[in-house]
Length: 277
View 1 (spheres, rainbow, N blue to C red):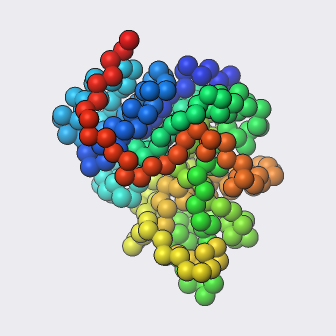
View 2 (tube, rainbow, N blue to C red; view 1 turned 90 degrees about the horizontal axis):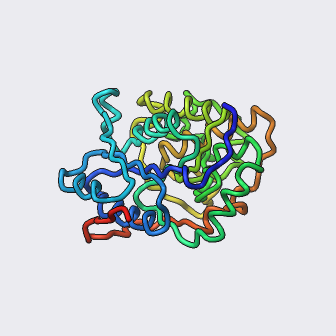
């Protein structure tokens, strides 16, 4: 792909929810619509009819029902998060620049911080063209624990090999992503969706998302797995290493934290009604 200059008004916001997280998604939509008029694409992962009717009352919002029947049965298990890379691949074919955000993301202080982010984006090089990987920092991921016990995450490495030393040195970054179409991002999207369509790659047996840390937070496996976050971190880090990009200190370089945050359990029970002006 030839990089196309970013037009702020054409940036698309892509989000998703099932019925049990709709009150959080409702709050997220209000956060976006208060600040932006940009197109929102909302993937229905199992909403009630009344919730879909609510979304129809939001200006410039398109509802897309995720077609689980097109994919292997394990994709229907939402706790495996296989649907997220599939959504990423679908919208990648359509839009030049887009955010992928979950129901808990809230925006604020977009002037000047978001506009500075957009302005600087084309100048950060091809390593930034899949740039959501320095957003929200998570504890370091490890291939194995200190006693060499294989971790659930290590099973993912059967499909997505990675240099052991590199893996130990990296911080794992979160799932809010701003994506620009490029050859680099296309390759990352491709490998990520292939992992999502392989059950033992994205969600190895007995995986669990909640971590149990001890005093050695960065050196000992915490008995958890981050599913799509793990896969995209491994893929992007490996591609950057392959292409010779110098690794950045992503923990201290987090411009997106200036205008967005993760607010778990932040709900809104007032029905949506945001007509076009």
